[in-house]
Length: 450
Image (cartoon, rainbow, N blue to C red):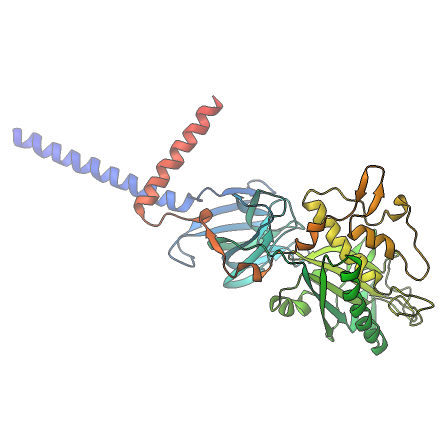
Protein backbone atom coordinates (compact mmCIF):
# COMPACT_ATOMS: atom_id res chain seq x y z
CA UNK A 1 0.00 0.00 0.00
CA UNK A 2 2.82 2.33 0.93
CA UNK A 3 4.60 1.41 -2.28
CA UNK A 4 1.50 2.37 -4.30
CA UNK A 5 1.35 5.74 -2.58
CA UNK A 6 5.03 6.34 -3.30
CA UNK A 7 4.50 5.33 -6.93
CA UNK A 8 1.52 7.67 -7.29
CA UNK A 9 3.49 10.50 -5.67
CA UNK A 10 6.40 9.86 -8.03
CA UNK A 11 4.12 9.87 -11.05
CA UNK A 12 2.43 13.04 -9.81
CA UNK A 13 5.82 14.72 -9.32
CA UNK A 14 6.89 13.68 -12.81
CA UNK A 15 3.65 15.07 -14.26
CA UNK A 16 4.03 18.34 -12.35
CA UNK A 17 7.68 18.62 -13.35
CA UNK A 18 6.81 17.91 -16.99
CA UNK A 19 4.01 20.47 -17.00
CA UNK A 20 6.30 22.97 -15.32
CA UNK A 21 9.07 22.27 -17.83
CA UNK A 22 6.67 22.67 -20.74
CA UNK A 23 5.33 25.90 -19.23
CA UNK A 24 8.86 27.23 -18.76
CA UNK A 25 9.76 26.21 -22.31
CA UNK A 26 6.66 27.89 -23.76
CA UNK A 27 7.26 30.97 -21.63
CA UNK A 28 10.86 31.09 -22.83
CA UNK A 29 9.76 30.72 -26.45
CA UNK A 30 7.22 33.50 -25.93
CA UNK A 31 9.92 35.62 -24.33
CA UNK A 32 12.27 35.09 -27.28
CA UNK A 33 9.55 36.08 -29.74
CA UNK A 34 8.32 39.06 -27.77
CA UNK A 35 11.32 40.44 -25.89
CA UNK A 36 12.08 43.73 -27.61
CA UNK A 37 14.95 44.70 -25.31
CA UNK A 38 13.25 47.88 -24.04
CA UNK A 39 12.44 49.06 -27.55
CA UNK A 40 9.10 50.85 -27.84
CA UNK A 41 6.92 49.75 -30.74
CA UNK A 42 4.77 52.37 -32.43
CA UNK A 43 2.98 52.94 -35.71
CA UNK A 44 1.14 55.72 -37.49
CA UNK A 45 -1.86 53.47 -38.18
CA UNK A 46 -2.51 51.59 -34.97
CA UNK A 47 -2.97 47.81 -35.05
CA UNK A 48 -1.88 47.65 -38.68
CA UNK A 49 1.68 46.30 -38.53
CA UNK A 50 3.09 43.23 -36.77
CA UNK A 51 6.21 43.33 -34.59
CA UNK A 52 8.11 40.20 -33.59
CA UNK A 53 11.50 38.70 -32.81
CA UNK A 54 12.24 36.35 -35.68
CA UNK A 55 14.31 33.23 -34.90
CA UNK A 56 14.06 31.90 -38.46
CA UNK A 57 15.39 34.91 -40.41
CA UNK A 58 18.34 36.39 -38.57
CA UNK A 59 21.77 37.81 -39.36
CA UNK A 60 23.67 36.63 -36.29
CA UNK A 61 22.92 34.30 -33.38
CA UNK A 62 20.32 36.72 -31.96
CA UNK A 63 16.71 36.78 -33.10
CA UNK A 64 16.15 39.64 -35.54
CA UNK A 65 13.60 42.40 -35.06
CA UNK A 66 10.92 42.10 -37.71
CA UNK A 67 8.25 44.54 -38.91
CA UNK A 68 5.53 43.29 -41.22
CA UNK A 69 3.17 45.80 -42.81
CA UNK A 70 0.61 44.30 -45.14
CA UNK A 71 -0.86 47.78 -45.56
CA UNK A 72 0.96 51.08 -45.99
CA UNK A 73 2.11 52.31 -42.59
CA UNK A 74 4.94 53.97 -40.71
CA UNK A 75 5.97 51.41 -38.09
CA UNK A 76 9.05 51.45 -35.90
CA UNK A 77 11.09 50.21 -32.96
CA UNK A 78 12.49 53.11 -30.94
CA UNK A 79 14.59 53.78 -27.87
CA UNK A 80 15.63 57.08 -26.28
CA UNK A 81 19.39 57.45 -26.00
CA UNK A 82 21.26 59.84 -23.74
CA UNK A 83 23.89 61.80 -25.67
CA UNK A 84 26.45 64.55 -25.10
CA UNK A 85 25.62 67.87 -26.71
CA UNK A 86 27.44 68.88 -29.92
CA UNK A 87 28.86 65.40 -30.39
CA UNK A 88 28.91 63.16 -33.49
CA UNK A 89 27.25 59.74 -33.29
CA UNK A 90 27.03 56.82 -35.68
CA UNK A 91 24.25 54.24 -35.50
CA UNK A 92 24.59 51.05 -37.55
CA UNK A 93 22.50 47.95 -38.04
CA UNK A 94 21.96 45.16 -40.53
CA UNK A 95 18.76 45.38 -42.57
CA UNK A 96 17.03 42.85 -44.80
CA UNK A 97 13.85 43.57 -46.78
CA UNK A 98 11.23 41.69 -48.74
CA UNK A 99 8.64 43.34 -50.96
CA UNK A 100 9.11 46.79 -49.44
CA UNK A 101 7.41 49.54 -51.42
CA UNK A 102 6.46 53.14 -50.69
CA UNK A 103 3.09 54.80 -51.13
CA UNK A 104 4.73 57.54 -53.21
CA UNK A 105 7.79 58.04 -55.36
CA UNK A 106 10.27 59.13 -52.70
CA UNK A 107 13.68 57.68 -51.90
CA UNK A 108 13.26 58.68 -48.25
CA UNK A 109 10.64 55.96 -47.59
CA UNK A 110 11.56 52.37 -46.71
CA UNK A 111 13.50 50.44 -44.07
CA UNK A 112 15.81 52.92 -42.37
CA UNK A 113 17.31 54.44 -39.23
CA UNK A 114 16.21 57.92 -38.18
CA UNK A 115 15.56 60.27 -35.27
CA UNK A 116 11.94 60.59 -34.24
CA UNK A 117 10.16 63.84 -35.14
CA UNK A 118 13.01 65.04 -37.39
CA UNK A 119 14.03 64.58 -41.02
CA UNK A 120 17.42 63.18 -39.95
CA UNK A 121 17.75 59.69 -41.39
CA UNK A 122 19.88 57.06 -43.08
CA UNK A 123 19.36 55.75 -46.58
CA UNK A 124 16.02 53.94 -46.99
CA UNK A 125 16.04 50.35 -48.27
CA UNK A 126 13.21 49.14 -50.50
CA UNK A 127 12.33 46.14 -52.67
CA UNK A 128 13.93 42.76 -51.97
CA UNK A 129 17.39 43.00 -50.43
CA UNK A 130 19.64 40.64 -48.53
CA UNK A 131 21.30 41.66 -45.29
CA UNK A 132 23.22 44.91 -45.68
CA UNK A 133 24.88 47.30 -43.27
CA UNK A 134 23.15 50.66 -42.93
CA UNK A 135 24.81 53.63 -41.23
CA UNK A 136 23.23 56.74 -39.81
CA UNK A 137 25.55 59.59 -38.79
CA UNK A 138 24.25 62.60 -36.90
CA UNK A 139 25.31 65.39 -34.59
CA UNK A 140 23.48 65.70 -31.28
CA UNK A 141 23.61 69.53 -31.59
CA UNK A 142 21.79 71.08 -28.63
CA UNK A 143 20.17 67.81 -27.52
CA UNK A 144 21.01 65.60 -24.57
CA UNK A 145 18.43 62.93 -25.51
CA UNK A 146 17.53 61.58 -28.95
CA UNK A 147 14.86 59.04 -29.84
CA UNK A 148 16.48 56.74 -32.40
CA UNK A 149 14.07 54.68 -34.47
CA UNK A 150 14.42 51.68 -36.75
CA UNK A 151 11.46 51.99 -39.04
CA UNK A 152 9.58 50.73 -42.04
CA UNK A 153 8.14 53.91 -43.50
CA UNK A 154 9.36 57.48 -43.25
CA UNK A 155 8.55 61.06 -42.39
CA UNK A 156 7.33 61.76 -45.92
CA UNK A 157 5.12 58.72 -46.46
CA UNK A 158 4.21 55.13 -45.66
CA UNK A 159 5.64 51.75 -46.70
CA UNK A 160 4.52 48.15 -46.74
CA UNK A 161 6.33 44.83 -46.90
CA UNK A 162 8.67 43.03 -44.52
CA UNK A 163 11.84 44.36 -42.90
CA UNK A 164 14.29 42.73 -40.52
CA UNK A 165 16.72 44.64 -38.30
CA UNK A 166 19.67 43.16 -36.42
CA UNK A 167 23.00 43.89 -34.71
CA UNK A 168 22.30 47.43 -33.53
CA UNK A 169 25.31 49.54 -32.59
CA UNK A 170 25.87 53.17 -31.60
CA UNK A 171 29.25 54.86 -31.42
CA UNK A 172 30.32 58.25 -30.10
CA UNK A 173 32.91 60.09 -32.17
CA UNK A 174 35.28 62.97 -31.64
CA UNK A 175 34.31 66.60 -32.15
CA UNK A 176 36.27 68.42 -34.85
CA UNK A 177 36.82 71.95 -33.64
CA UNK A 178 38.52 73.32 -36.75
CA UNK A 179 36.81 75.85 -39.00
CA UNK A 180 38.09 74.52 -42.33
CA UNK A 181 35.03 73.83 -44.47
CA UNK A 182 35.12 71.41 -47.40
CA UNK A 183 32.61 72.00 -50.19
CA UNK A 184 31.52 69.86 -53.13
CA UNK A 185 30.22 71.80 -56.13
CA UNK A 186 28.38 69.66 -58.69
CA UNK A 187 27.77 71.28 -62.07
CA UNK A 188 25.04 69.32 -63.88
CA UNK A 189 25.60 69.72 -67.58
CA UNK A 190 22.27 68.25 -68.67
CA UNK A 191 18.67 68.46 -67.47
CA UNK A 192 16.27 66.06 -69.21
CA UNK A 193 12.87 66.06 -67.53
CA UNK A 194 9.18 65.79 -68.28
CA UNK A 195 7.19 68.73 -66.94
CA UNK A 196 3.46 69.10 -67.56
CA UNK A 197 3.64 66.33 -70.18
CA UNK A 198 6.41 68.16 -72.04
CA UNK A 199 9.88 66.74 -72.60
CA UNK A 200 12.48 69.38 -71.83
CA UNK A 201 16.20 69.06 -72.51
CA UNK A 202 18.50 71.84 -71.32
CA UNK A 203 22.30 72.00 -71.45
CA UNK A 204 24.94 73.97 -69.61
CA UNK A 205 27.48 75.72 -71.84
CA UNK A 206 31.26 75.76 -71.54
CA UNK A 207 30.98 79.47 -70.71
CA UNK A 208 28.67 78.61 -67.80
CA UNK A 209 31.23 76.15 -66.44
CA UNK A 210 34.05 78.69 -66.73
CA UNK A 211 31.95 81.31 -64.95
CA UNK A 212 31.10 78.93 -62.10
CA UNK A 213 34.72 77.88 -61.67
CA UNK A 214 35.83 81.49 -61.45
CA UNK A 215 33.00 82.31 -59.05
CA UNK A 216 33.88 79.39 -56.78
CA UNK A 217 37.45 80.70 -56.51
CA UNK A 218 36.04 84.05 -55.40
CA UNK A 219 33.66 82.28 -52.98
CA UNK A 220 36.61 80.57 -51.27
CA UNK A 221 38.38 83.88 -50.80
CA UNK A 222 35.24 85.72 -49.65
CA UNK A 223 34.44 83.13 -46.98
CA UNK A 224 37.77 83.85 -45.32
CA UNK A 225 37.72 87.60 -45.86
CA UNK A 226 34.10 88.31 -44.92
CA UNK A 227 34.29 86.10 -41.83
CA UNK A 228 37.49 87.94 -40.85
CA UNK A 229 39.39 84.66 -40.76
CA UNK A 230 36.83 82.76 -38.69
CA UNK A 231 36.52 80.11 -41.42
CA UNK A 232 38.16 78.89 -44.59
CA UNK A 233 36.56 77.27 -47.63
CA UNK A 234 37.98 74.67 -49.99
CA UNK A 235 35.74 73.57 -52.85
CA UNK A 236 36.04 70.58 -55.19
CA UNK A 237 34.22 71.01 -58.50
CA UNK A 238 32.65 68.08 -60.36
CA UNK A 239 31.17 68.29 -63.85
CA UNK A 240 28.35 65.73 -64.05
CA UNK A 241 27.26 64.64 -67.52
CA UNK A 242 24.56 62.18 -66.41
CA UNK A 243 21.36 64.22 -66.77
CA UNK A 244 18.97 65.25 -64.04
CA UNK A 245 15.79 63.32 -64.85
CA UNK A 246 13.47 64.39 -62.04
CA UNK A 247 12.65 67.64 -60.27
CA UNK A 248 10.89 68.41 -57.02
CA UNK A 249 8.10 70.93 -56.66
CA UNK A 250 7.14 73.39 -53.94
CA UNK A 251 4.16 75.75 -53.93
CA UNK A 252 6.37 78.64 -52.83
CA UNK A 253 9.37 78.08 -55.09
CA UNK A 254 8.06 76.02 -58.00
CA UNK A 255 10.48 73.42 -59.41
CA UNK A 256 13.90 72.83 -57.86
CA UNK A 257 16.48 70.07 -57.39
CA UNK A 258 16.11 68.17 -54.12
CA UNK A 259 18.90 65.87 -52.87
CA UNK A 260 16.91 62.77 -53.88
CA UNK A 261 16.70 64.05 -57.48
CA UNK A 262 20.47 63.72 -57.90
CA UNK A 263 21.39 61.16 -55.24
CA UNK A 264 22.44 58.50 -57.73
CA UNK A 265 24.86 60.93 -59.41
CA UNK A 266 26.53 62.23 -56.24
CA UNK A 267 26.34 59.50 -53.58
CA UNK A 268 29.56 57.68 -54.52
CA UNK A 269 31.54 60.91 -54.54
CA UNK A 270 30.09 62.06 -51.23
CA UNK A 271 30.72 58.66 -49.61
CA UNK A 272 34.40 58.84 -50.58
CA UNK A 273 34.99 62.27 -49.06
CA UNK A 274 34.25 64.24 -45.93
CA UNK A 275 32.34 67.21 -47.29
CA UNK A 276 30.65 69.78 -45.07
CA UNK A 277 28.41 71.38 -47.69
CA UNK A 278 27.11 70.60 -51.19
CA UNK A 279 26.26 72.96 -54.04
CA UNK A 280 24.17 71.64 -56.95
CA UNK A 281 24.52 73.98 -59.94
CA UNK A 282 21.74 73.50 -62.50
CA UNK A 283 20.10 75.15 -65.45
CA UNK A 284 16.32 74.85 -65.49
CA UNK A 285 15.58 77.14 -68.42
CA UNK A 286 17.01 79.10 -71.31
CA UNK A 287 15.77 81.50 -73.95
CA UNK A 288 13.97 78.69 -75.80
CA UNK A 289 12.22 77.05 -72.81
CA UNK A 290 11.83 80.07 -70.57
CA UNK A 291 8.19 79.38 -69.69
CA UNK A 292 8.24 75.57 -69.69
CA UNK A 293 9.55 74.97 -66.14
CA UNK A 294 7.79 76.89 -63.42
CA UNK A 295 10.33 78.78 -61.32
CA UNK A 296 8.98 81.19 -58.70
CA UNK A 297 11.58 83.92 -58.37
CA UNK A 298 14.58 82.07 -56.98
CA UNK A 299 18.17 81.91 -58.15
CA UNK A 300 19.41 79.96 -55.12
CA UNK A 301 17.79 77.72 -52.50
CA UNK A 302 19.48 76.76 -49.25
CA UNK A 303 18.85 75.29 -45.80
CA UNK A 304 18.36 71.78 -47.22
CA UNK A 305 20.52 68.81 -46.29
CA UNK A 306 21.79 65.55 -47.73
CA UNK A 307 22.00 63.06 -44.82
CA UNK A 308 23.01 65.86 -42.46
CA UNK A 309 25.29 67.69 -44.91
CA UNK A 310 24.17 71.18 -45.96
CA UNK A 311 22.74 71.21 -49.49
CA UNK A 312 22.05 74.23 -51.74
CA UNK A 313 20.65 74.79 -55.22
CA UNK A 314 22.45 77.30 -57.44
CA UNK A 315 20.40 78.04 -60.56
CA UNK A 316 22.06 79.33 -63.69
CA UNK A 317 20.12 82.19 -65.29
CA UNK A 318 18.04 81.49 -68.39
CA UNK A 319 19.74 84.29 -70.29
CA UNK A 320 23.28 83.83 -71.55
CA UNK A 321 23.70 87.60 -71.24
CA UNK A 322 23.27 87.59 -67.46
CA UNK A 323 26.14 88.73 -65.24
CA UNK A 324 24.95 87.00 -62.06
CA UNK A 325 28.03 84.74 -61.94
CA UNK A 326 30.43 86.91 -63.94
CA UNK A 327 32.86 89.38 -62.40
CA UNK A 328 32.86 92.78 -64.09
CA UNK A 329 34.17 95.87 -62.38
CA UNK A 330 31.39 97.93 -63.96
CA UNK A 331 28.50 95.46 -63.59
CA UNK A 332 29.03 92.89 -60.80
CA UNK A 333 31.92 92.92 -58.32
CA UNK A 334 30.38 90.24 -56.09
CA UNK A 335 29.36 87.30 -58.37
CA UNK A 336 29.86 84.79 -55.52
CA UNK A 337 26.95 86.32 -53.61
CA UNK A 338 24.43 83.55 -54.39
CA UNK A 339 26.84 80.84 -53.21
CA UNK A 340 27.60 82.72 -50.00
CA UNK A 341 23.95 83.53 -49.36
CA UNK A 342 22.82 79.91 -49.64
CA UNK A 343 25.69 78.66 -47.50
CA UNK A 344 24.77 81.21 -44.83
CA UNK A 345 21.25 79.78 -44.78
CA UNK A 346 22.80 76.53 -43.52
CA UNK A 347 24.75 78.37 -40.83
CA UNK A 348 21.56 80.24 -39.94
CA UNK A 349 19.70 76.95 -39.47
CA UNK A 350 22.58 75.43 -37.48
CA UNK A 351 22.67 78.42 -35.14
CA UNK A 352 18.97 78.08 -34.43
CA UNK A 353 19.30 74.32 -33.87
CA UNK A 354 21.89 75.06 -31.20
CA UNK A 355 19.48 77.43 -29.46
CA UNK A 356 21.02 80.72 -30.63
CA UNK A 357 18.80 83.72 -31.34
CA UNK A 358 19.98 85.42 -34.53
CA UNK A 359 18.49 87.76 -37.14
CA UNK A 360 16.92 86.19 -40.23
CA UNK A 361 19.28 86.26 -43.20
CA UNK A 362 16.66 87.95 -45.39
CA UNK A 363 15.92 90.77 -42.92
CA UNK A 364 18.78 93.06 -43.91
CA UNK A 365 16.45 96.03 -44.57
CA UNK A 366 15.09 95.87 -41.03
CA UNK A 367 18.57 96.70 -39.75
CA UNK A 368 19.24 99.56 -42.17
CA UNK A 369 21.17 97.70 -44.86
CA UNK A 370 20.60 98.07 -48.61
CA UNK A 371 21.11 95.96 -51.71
CA UNK A 372 23.95 98.07 -53.11
CA UNK A 373 24.94 98.58 -56.74
CA UNK A 374 27.86 96.35 -57.82
CA UNK A 375 28.27 94.58 -54.46
CA UNK A 376 24.71 93.56 -53.52
CA UNK A 377 24.40 92.73 -49.80
CA UNK A 378 28.12 92.29 -49.19
CA UNK A 379 28.31 94.61 -46.18
CA UNK A 380 25.28 92.88 -44.60
CA UNK A 381 26.93 89.48 -45.00
CA UNK A 382 30.17 90.72 -43.45
CA UNK A 383 28.44 92.13 -40.40
CA UNK A 384 26.13 89.10 -40.20
CA UNK A 385 29.12 86.72 -40.19
CA UNK A 386 30.93 88.66 -37.47
CA UNK A 387 28.08 89.53 -35.09
CA UNK A 388 28.44 93.23 -35.92
CA UNK A 389 24.83 94.13 -36.75
CA UNK A 390 24.04 97.06 -34.48
CA UNK A 391 20.81 97.16 -32.47
CA UNK A 392 19.74 99.17 -29.45
CA UNK A 393 20.38 96.05 -27.34
CA UNK A 394 23.87 95.43 -28.67
CA UNK A 395 25.46 93.71 -31.64
CA UNK A 396 23.95 90.58 -33.17
CA UNK A 397 24.72 88.06 -35.92
CA UNK A 398 26.12 84.57 -36.29
CA UNK A 399 27.86 83.30 -33.14
CA UNK A 400 31.57 82.72 -33.74
CA UNK A 401 31.32 79.08 -32.65
CA UNK A 402 28.99 78.26 -35.56
CA UNK A 403 32.03 77.99 -37.85
CA UNK A 404 33.20 74.92 -35.95
CA UNK A 405 29.75 73.28 -35.79
CA UNK A 406 30.18 71.25 -38.94
CA UNK A 407 28.14 68.18 -39.94
CA UNK A 408 29.06 64.83 -38.44
CA UNK A 409 30.88 62.62 -40.94
CA UNK A 410 33.05 59.50 -41.17
CA UNK A 411 36.24 61.31 -40.19
CA UNK A 412 34.76 61.91 -36.72
CA UNK A 413 34.86 58.18 -35.94
CA UNK A 414 38.51 57.28 -36.37
CA UNK A 415 38.75 56.71 -32.60
CA UNK A 416 35.10 56.10 -31.75
CA UNK A 417 33.89 54.05 -28.82
CA UNK A 418 30.71 52.02 -28.55
CA UNK A 419 27.89 52.81 -26.15
CA UNK A 420 26.15 49.83 -24.55
CA UNK A 421 22.68 51.07 -25.42
CA UNK A 422 21.68 48.09 -27.54
CA UNK A 423 23.41 45.31 -25.60
CA UNK A 424 21.35 42.11 -25.64
CA UNK A 425 21.46 39.17 -23.18
CA UNK A 426 24.42 36.95 -24.06
CA UNK A 427 23.24 33.73 -22.38
CA UNK A 428 20.22 32.14 -20.74
CA UNK A 429 21.18 33.46 -17.29
CA UNK A 430 21.18 37.04 -18.57
CA UNK A 431 17.90 36.37 -20.36
CA UNK A 432 16.25 35.05 -17.18
CA UNK A 433 17.58 38.06 -15.27
CA UNK A 434 16.11 40.27 -17.99
CA UNK A 435 12.72 38.57 -17.65
CA UNK A 436 12.58 39.29 -13.92
CA UNK A 437 13.91 42.85 -14.35
CA UNK A 438 11.20 43.57 -16.88
CA UNK A 439 8.61 41.92 -14.63
CA UNK A 440 9.59 43.99 -11.59
CA UNK A 441 9.81 47.14 -13.72
CA UNK A 442 6.29 46.62 -15.05
CA UNK A 443 4.96 45.87 -11.54
CA UNK A 444 6.56 49.10 -10.34
CA UNK A 445 4.95 51.06 -13.17
CA UNK A 446 1.56 49.57 -12.31
CA UNK A 447 1.92 50.34 -8.58
CA UNK A 448 3.02 53.90 -9.38
CA UNK A 449 -0.25 54.48 -11.21
CA UNK A 450 -2.41 53.18 -8.33
